[in-house]
Length: 539
Image 1 (cartoon, rainbow, N blue to C red):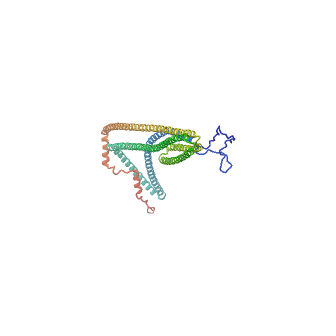
Image 2: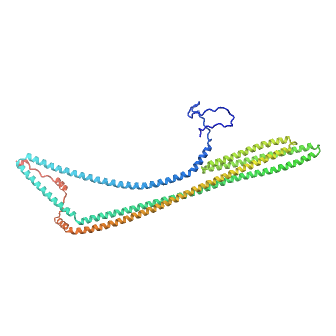
Image 3: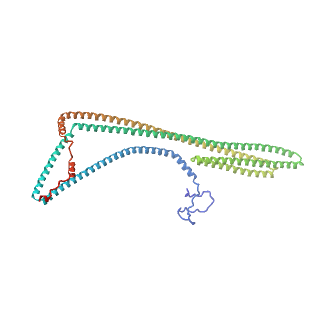
């Protein structure tokens, strides 16, 4: 933008040698300056216009590609979120199950360690008691201790056999068919209840997904409606702006027509006045030389009056043109401010139009000043050479006015061409906007059709899963029935044996007084130990 070095033109008259382009970062003579001289700002307007046109042409494809990429990313993110949520849920369930199992194993290990410690303490205490008694007592005490040890061993063996018998009877009781049937029924009931809960959860999940899809569909429809309303409002605003511009142009055209009509009227009046002057001059030439001075004086007065009238008309016309230009400038300023507040995209176009219009007004004002200067010169020549060069002045005036008319017609023709070019550009922009809207509408229709197709596929998949689950449940029921029949056949054979064992257990009442070995050890430790015989009493 500022680093371009403009070459001198070929037709320049300057023969001075230009210095070579120096480095940008080379320091200059003054503090904070550099040797490289950049161009003035706002001199790259043609490059910015070209970039704006290229961006405007490439903007549609880039926006469509960006919208397509965003939609694909949203679909991928939604699918990944669904799968990720399922994986996270399963992982959490597995972690909780593993944590519970570890806690259970830890508590079991602690209980086992505690019981083993109690057993070791009991054995050590018994060992210490026997050793102490053997060392401190005499032979009789030793025999008594040995006898007592034998009794203890016999009691322990009896307790062991009793416990083994109780365990055996307990196993028979646990192998009972009634208990097994109850456990199997409970397990089947739990599995069915879990399946029902899973089906309800899946159904609720499907309903939530449908609700979310319906919600997103409503949101997209609302966005489309709001976009249509915004476009309609933009079109109305553009129409109003164009209507205001057309009003300004109509006022300008009316002012031009009034100026042209006034010029035509003045031209006709000048022509009539010149014809009248020609007639009077002819009369003066035919008249006597005595009245020549008087006629010349009157003619001079008439010319001065005509010059005053022309000057007054020029001043009045200048006043009208200045007021008209001020009104047009005010309208243009208001239109520019309104468009700055509402639309920023058409700012460059309006600036170019206002610049062209101001340039045209400046050209007209310049032309008017030149015409006024020429008119003053012609009037001075006409005053000096009234008698000699009347016809020549008339021809020059007529040629000047014809040239002015041609310039005005040419300017109007150029203005009409610019207006047509602007209209063609606006029609082209409208066509492009219409095509873009049609493409967006087609894209939305494709997305809706794709959404409907996916919904149908999901419904079909859900129906297939339900049918498979129903078929699987039927197979499970059939297998359960077969298994129950087989169990019934086997239970008829083994029922007598189990019933007899259960009767034995009921007759002896061992289930009520069965105790675990650890519980027996704990009860034994809680009892007050039997005191050893005092050595003094033995003595």
